[in-house]
Length: 316
Image 1: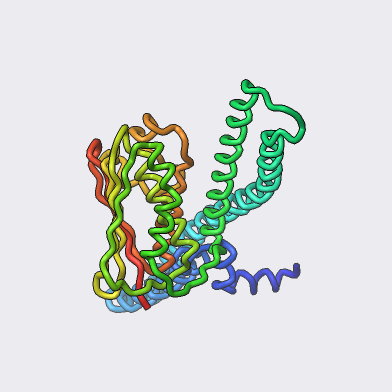
Image 2 (image 1 turned 30 degrees about the vertical axis):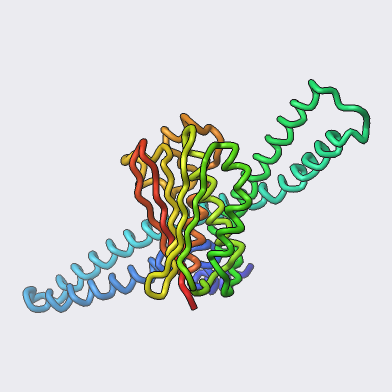
């Protein structure tokens, strides 16, 4: 590529921000532009003040030159550091995306091969073999879930996760999702209660992605309850938004871990004592989807007593 095209590409700030998958305020090129404006303003102010207190114009010019040069070097170093971090983040996201795509096909093949073998079409399956096939099936399903989560995270970071907004009933979607967790809840001795206000308006968002949010929250609520427990879900209208609330009486989140709860790959130590499975990506994905849908998410938790999550979605 000719050097003049490279320079033009660098000057195209929106394109560079899109390349790194960053917002305008996080983009290295935009930061450099802002710092350039600050340098010009500082130099102008220094010159104006200097001419009032220093008689020799050469001394004023020297002070302004030294200040401008120092600030320019600092701006360049800071911008380059941000650019290297942004490039490393972009390459990491691309690597995760490529690896996730490449893993999906072999995992699907493994899944269908195991199901075909368990069907008995190739011969009778002995009882001692069934348990091993079940282990293979469960582990391949777990790997497929992890790959799916990694792919979603990669798309979120690259701002490539499609958001097809439409009006839909959050109540109907929640009821349907609760039904899908019925067997899992019963197996865990957990009772799920659901309440929704009457005549709730439709919410505005992507139903497939909001379903993923509800799934993550219900799965966490059930999974981290010891012995017998209860999960309470409610939906109500507040102003021009719909508020979703899910409350459990599980293990809770330690106070010192609560500030990290929405970070990627983070899992509390007390949670890992009860459930070693999990990628630590669910709440990161949940928060990203809710915020991209125009809502907010927050929680309250006390270790040993349970956790309550809330999120809002706009109505049209």
